Image 1: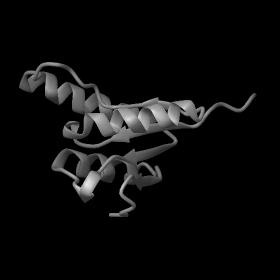
Image 2 (image 1 turned 90 degrees about the horizontal axis):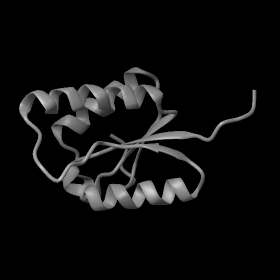
Image 3 (image 1 turned 90 degrees about the vertical axis):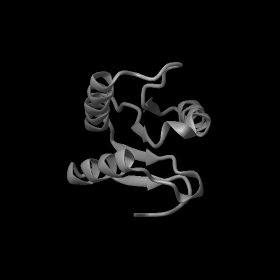
Image 4 (image 1 turned 120 degrees about the vertical axis):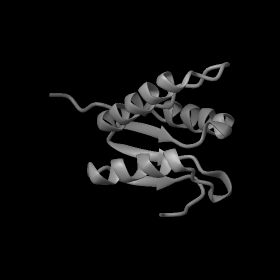
Length: 101
């Protein structure tokens, strides 16, 4: 079976959408398959937020590793849960600001 490109799941606060888009662009241009949080021009309803959070965990399942976009070291509650989930699944986790929580 031929090798496939690495799959990276981007995690982080949607307040850093621009930074996540930049990381997505850089990784994609390097030949990496990127899965990232869904971002919409509106605020989803609570039930939609829960469904999106569960879907993002499935994206982590698909990934070979996780990249946390965390300018200034910020990691919110949801991203903290995603990091814990990724580590529990044995996925390597790296951070854009170089921190290793």
